[in-house]
Amino acid sequence: MTQEEQAGARLLELVAVMRRLRRECPWDAKQTHATLAPHLLEESYEALEALESGDPDALREELGDVLLQVMFHAEVASERTDGTGYTIDDVAEGIAAKLVRRHPHVFGDVTVSGADEVKQNWDAIKAAEREAKSGAPGSVLDGVPFGQPALALAEQLQRRAERAGVPGELAGLDGAAGLGAELFALVARARAAGLDPELELRAAARAYRDQVQAWEQAQRS
Image 1: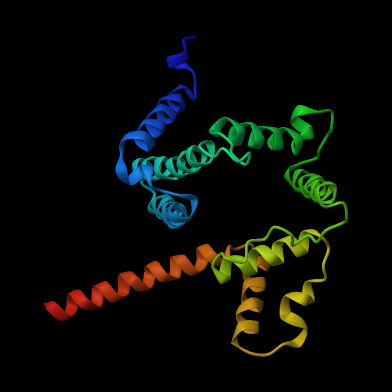
Image 2: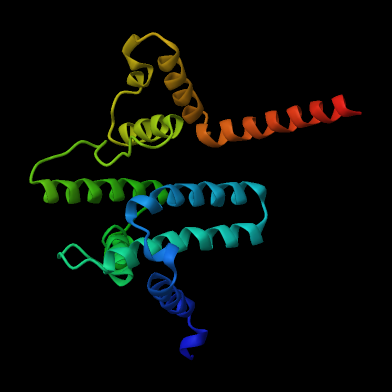
């Protein structure tokens, strides 16, 4: 099999394109991690929207835009000379090593009974990694990004806590009142029903959009 026929061969082409843009395009050349940050979030949302649309061609295109952001950030990092730089190969090597490390049932001699045990092992390995890095036991909530949308944040906090064996009643914020507490409890209800609260709300938002647009059309006729 030639290199051109191998999966991933086109990624080398993208690396070359990205490097040339950093040298020859004024806009690309002046970008930093900070200026690119909004695009990383925006492209991820656009990929999610394409996924929800059911259009495979749109999803492929949007995944390319997400990949571009990864490549762009790695290229910016590779140009640093203060010892903090890294390349796209370092990024790929890191995630590949992490996947191997956290899948001992595939790359090692561990036996699992199913997907649930895979998740349990993943969490245990991740906790051990956090402890090794910090030198002390951490929280199961370490690493949860609080900059994400509040609905997704609440779901991730509850999911992490549940896996760690935290009592389910804490999802009710121990009797706390207020709209925020009610919304937090509603997230717990959705999870208990096997639903993703973020996706459920997005579906409701799309249905509302359709109703508003139908009403607007009716007003014009």
